[in-house]
Image 1 (cartoon, rainbow, N blue to C red):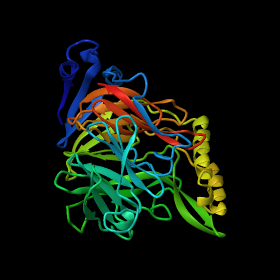
Image 2: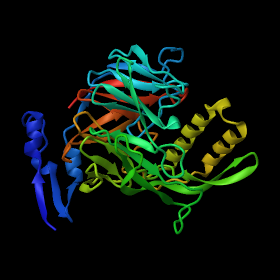
Image 3: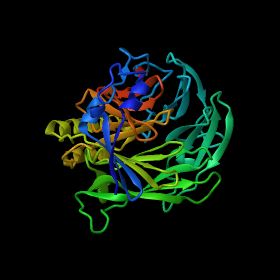
Image 4: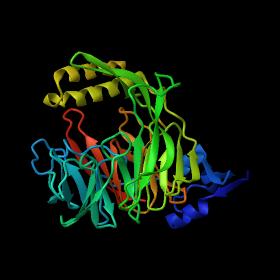
Length: 423
């Protein structure tokens, strides 16, 4: 095993255009070693604190949705969370494509926040979709709307034209295809297959366990998935649900527990196990190439955090209203009081790859926080900078802007905020 130190000051000074405002070289050192052919990079807390700070515009460039009486862009019922943050994409020219509404539809929105057109339509015929759980941008001008209910992806041009379909077979006992994470330049798609059962795996503590998580690939036009790697899934605990007087065992996610997060770049697969600040860079074939660790102290979960967690989820359940039978709704709200919580927040909670191939990684945060903290790492794993964003989910990041999904806690209405970004 080899040990050495690299100093990133020269690279960072060049990227910043000189030494103006640059941190000292001592603050930016990273310990690098080799572990059985895997490069391990370890950043100190001083290096993290000394990384260049990227800045947002003083105010959002534009805001989309979130108005109670808006009948043109209603994001409240259809824009849902996904591995990339939410279902939609930021285009290179600054326009947005967003999945919203019930039934779902794809909205193309210009840089001023105005609706340009609706792409595709709800249905079961050729080129139609029943549900969309992921929207990917292929080659810069083609959208892939992933519809697991019909086991297919529908391809659209940005002008709304239909460009074909792709079939995605189901995996294992599930009748639907596994969640899609991304598509490589050769058409190979990357998916996650979350293991799940009614009870904890044999030999594991029912109060805290993790099902297996498989990352698989599917060649363009193929019918069989190939396993790239195996991970551990989200931290769960054993619980139950009662429907029409019948009680059934089910697992539930531990509040603020570790959740593995993955992101697909064209030349790499990025992941984090969640418990510590660790990024893993793999080849698109699944081989581990690099591990990046940052010495960021873990934050304790407080009783106030737990109370806010329960309040947020309780409000969200109540907004379902007539969509869920009252017996189930009331039972699930009561179950919130039994939620098991982690002692500490996960070190990382979201990963996102921007158009430059850089990876954005957010520190775990409390629902009581007003901001979120992000580190940005280059394609080689080098820490490029840090940025503080308003509280919310990072929907997309571009070269000169970021898009944040925010929800009004009192109404449940959702809006997208586009902020200018200076690197």
